[in-house]
Image (cartoon, rainbow, N blue to C red; front, side, top):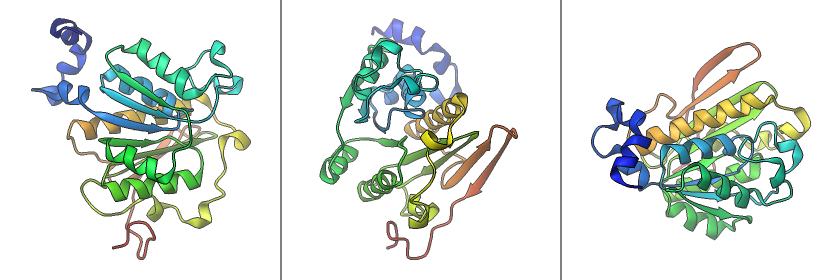
Length: 248
């Protein structure tokens, strides 16, 4: 895109004081891994692509299903049966052709996950199972990469930001332990579609702040939201003594 076209596309960003100088160029040179392209990864990836984040690595080994369509607005009915990573890359390229979208349609081995994260500036945890979240958190700690983690179920959502690029701990395992391994998932418990969209959008917002070098009130905090009650809370995450992931 030419300089003139870029200024027009991102003019609402450039009107913000935080986008003075080369802020938009920094987004264009950023590389982000999004693990999980479902209810959270769908809106998060749409906003990151729309914002001009230059390179998005899209990791999901699931396929689009009709039950996904109400809340995963990245996909269309014609995408059913197709790998989510492939369908997502195609849809995001249509949103912003200047963004390079790389589908990863397989489960990454520990070594692949580590090397992939090492080449990224930021990681979004949009997955839906405890084991993957734990492995992702450990890899981000090892590679000193910031992690934005989100979850949503029923009428409730949450977002947490871990700045492993700045400090060691607290981490995801300080927040959740092995006792939480059997956490409910939306397949069995249900979810209101806009709740997932709101959480994914919050994750994209936090990701953009990190990429722009802005501090966040959610750093080492958990933001929780009860959509049914219309209430939200911000809870500090303390480092857990002898945490198996971030203990010295």
